[in-house]
Image (cartoon, rainbow, N blue to C red; front, side, top):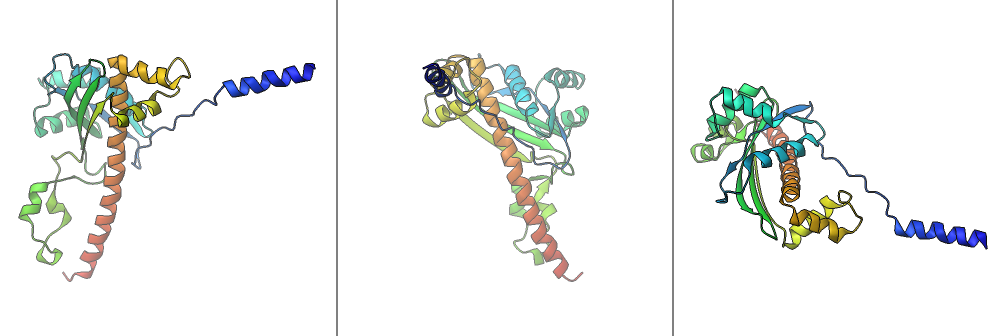
Length: 253
């Protein structure tokens, strides 16, 4: 009888408890460890409640969680901007100046495109990555170069003529509406194991009624998108570079 009761207790405990999920950390696609900085975002949402500094801080923490990337604290970025007498990033030239002043491998510049803290909350973000070409696998594509260049390698086109070092190498954007099915699924995945209870609906609700937590979630998702875009960009650059190298070898001098 005692054995039966003990077995029942153990079985009930196993049924009532879920195995804790081990979160898989995102890995950067670079050979060497990178140091990144995140500039204060521009508030282009039309809402005066959007906190650009807070969102930049959320992104800093998100990138700090990426394997292979160290993110500078936001106060270091603000100090450098103050030394440059720069209140915000107004142009590509500003982004390049700040990146060089900080001495980082890459600078993330972005906008808050939409912001609504009322239930259900909504937020839109757009991010540009300014990286050193030699550190991050090549410069960003200059779309204007496509209209100037001939259409054949034999006519003298080279990959370097289509790229400019003052362009962002990667650009991503996202819009998160807590009432949307897609956003709900993403919140479920992000909130799992981070909440105070094992109740999935309770955890999701926690992230939709607290705007700070919702911004944390959005920062994590945008950081993931940017890193994934970098993986694709570098893979594409390797393939394109290989094709052009083969073409160049076959051409007579």
